[in-house]
Image 1 (tube, rainbow, N blue to C red):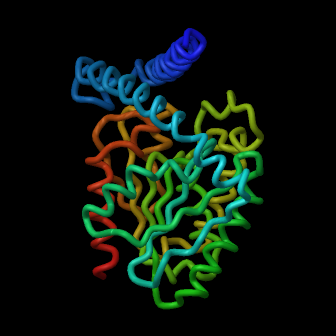
Image 2 (spheres, rainbow, N blue to C red; image 1 turned 90 degrees about the vertical axis):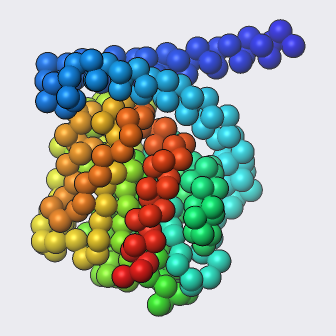
Length: 285
């Protein structure tokens, strides 16, 4: 029992350390111009404190359930499945170092609003961006071929949103979806990519080569082929600076959410309800 308690304590302290450290970096990055991002310095400090608390809670929750998703996806060699039917399908794509369990609460809240036909595309963060992009294209091609008139809504958190944005800019079948919604996506990359332990994470360098390549593909199409929505938190602790997460491509709709951490966007009921409202509007068009 003492070993379990020690492990639980170390786990808690590790999550707390990550939450505090990332927000210290957030404050260091934005402090000289914090009044331009919030009504006052006091409001900024309050939002950051809320961000730290949400980061701690979301890390404790997500890390706890992460193992089950890893076992299902990799140990059992499970592959992403298509939506159950052609009726209003929603495709969910997680972010870096996550798996299908990222969407467990969103799917629960979606069901309460009548959105039940969801499917999750997942991938290994050990692969590079181009490899995952090809896997995503293969998966979406399979879905669109299986349900040619379904026009699914695509939703991506963090790197998942960047993968979908890249697909939208490069695929000839982009008009066959109803729309795209991103959550906390590093539209311009992130300065924290420098600290990533994987090649995939380092590819997300702020205004780096990958971002420039995606922007070049978008420039050729000039406007997004379908409605696109970028949701961001004003205290995102993983995408620095804030300009990155709050600067979507031209033609996108930008929406500021309640101030929560990067990971906590997946665990916030108000954000899930907001997204479900956008999904409903996209399918009604």
